[in-house]
Length: 358
Image 1 (cartoon, helix red, strand yellow):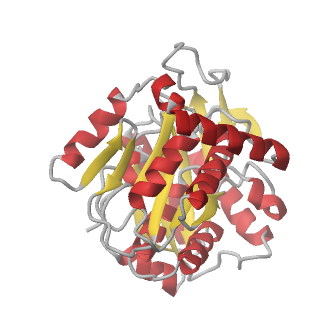
Image 2 (tube, rainbow, N blue to C red):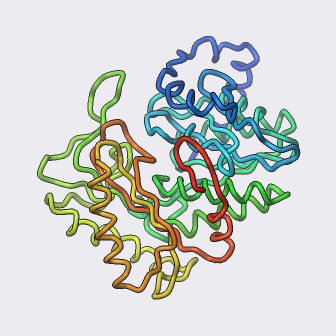
């Protein structure tokens, strides 16, 4: 994740020249059929609007609201566009399949959601996204928009607790965006929203597994390879390496192994108290694409048994295909340790294509 500063500012300079000439928009292929299929049902009631072929914003952003902008590569639907809505994100800047949104799209989305009180960028910690959102932030600053960034780093298998700032962002982003989106309706200061988003990130941990890859639509090739008799424990949503490959096993055997990793991480992290009896949590069970709802519910059943044995109180549960990778076969668990402040934001209702809470 280390980016050469001089290279970064050279890219900023190049991006400015390209955007001024409008060459970037002309050159980009608007391959947005999937995006349009996703958001059309949500746009019909006039709740959201397209700014361009790949940018969507909430239609009801209040004046002088601190805005929340999310984004990343396509191919993980229903995120990111699907998290734009009531008490969720105000906008989403997306790239092509598995590609970061270009800086001009980030700038366009920032300008569209800005209401004069700053914009918080909240997105997963991937090098391409970091580079392009950073350039977008510089361009936005040139336009007089105050921007802050919080990276989502919930994947416990991608770095140890002492280096958690280097971790990937995976399905925990659904919970984090829900919490930050609700908070954005109540705060009046960008710094305060940044603080709450960082708190949500600190309190959220995820672990995923995969049994079979997704594919890259343009080529039809798999995103990674794994033996059909093995499970990638801790594997990322693009097939990034996890902690190990283990023999194929049952959901009842696999679920405790995954949750153990999350509990161990809370224990080892000196920045937060370990999970202990009586703690309240949010539990998200995510399908990576091909995993069925029945399979997710089987894992949920075992997860609740595991948590009950430890005396952990499941305050709320979400189950479904929120963060996917095409037809990838796999599942992930995300746990958020609640406190009174985070519970207040979770309890607020929300509505979007991806997630609705009444």
